[in-house]
Image (cartoon, rainbow, N blue to C red):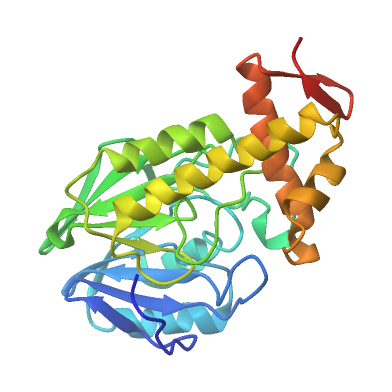
Length: 290
């Protein structure tokens, strides 16, 4: 990965001749330094993940666009730290919102306020898997990557051998998989999908620094999840089948503010194991299948 750079909210940083990023002023235990909005292109621009509806951030995006034509506003998914600014950016520029599908209707506030879903998101068009969006000198191709959310999409930029990975692959932390919308089996399949794209040499995540050895990094993420699954199975062998007790042991060194989110990821693993016939559930107790 890149060495850590001095990144301040609102200042456009060039990552590649076709790629700039603008940091939103929404740092937290879950967003790291904040959500990174990407601008792709020069004379014609696409904005990826416009971020939270914060006037200062939208002003910074508009300033970074400058005299260029905004071709499209593109979202990877609809958590509240990614898509709400799309509507205001469209109102200011007239550019269409083209990206992930709207969120599915589930009653799930998520483990934190900024992770709950943006119900206001209404795309003008949806980037289904394999669909491309083109501008002057660039192409964005949609890669369907459900798991973190059911509607998560990554976008490849072949001219830079790059992928904008949203929250599917982040440069600072592992991804929270929060059922019922988050799905561990789908997430693992989506990681495999990125592994099978040898043409990509850099990932630009929504949180954290660029990832310059992406296949090695993704292999590490897959290994990490398999390690977590192994920990869960070992705890079940010892009859520790209550999620809070599992989290207390599995995430002993992790900030306690993240334990609720960790519990959701453990639940996602358990649901996946249950669907594979390896574990069973009796109310809030889990055990190995006989």
